[in-house]
Length: 205
View 1 (cartoon, rainbow, N blue to C red):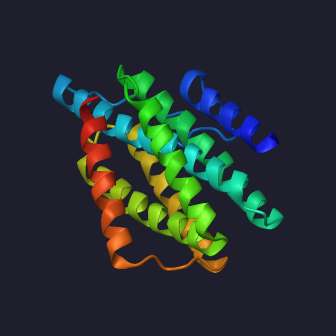
View 2 (view 1 turned 60 degrees about the vertical axis):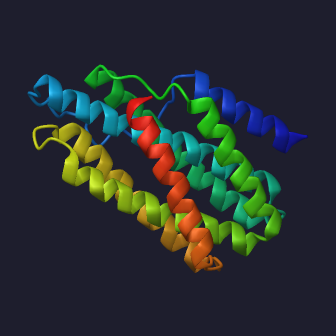
């Protein structure tokens, strides 16, 4: 029951409340770059995609923490979720600064990620950690591509994305160090395909 209440609380806070970061944004003190309308639209779309990724991270880690029976792993997952809350807040701040909105489909993205987290965690803790490691690897690669696409003048967004990339790579390394099971190629390919659908849709919606 406690796990269900925690999951419900996380869903409500992620989808409907203003996220609060425990650490200042990496963009703190940076002036907004001068962007033309096309650059501003692109930056907003990219940060919306990144915000969706953080919505999914909240769902994923919450689901896995709810299922595992390993207290140490639960603490690890919840700590990662806390850091992802920082990312959620930072990307929301960038959306606001760029005059962009979050994805209209965030409830759908949250529900899908939560279901995937439950399935992975039900298999085993090692499979759950393997799912975390692969997810974070793919997210880090995705963030690297955004660093190549964000306008050079948008130093604030670039600072946020670079910090997020470092954190995601660290989460993947921690999962592997904790005994993550390497996922088979078909599973990794399916995850990439699902992520492609999500990121392409979120770019516009």
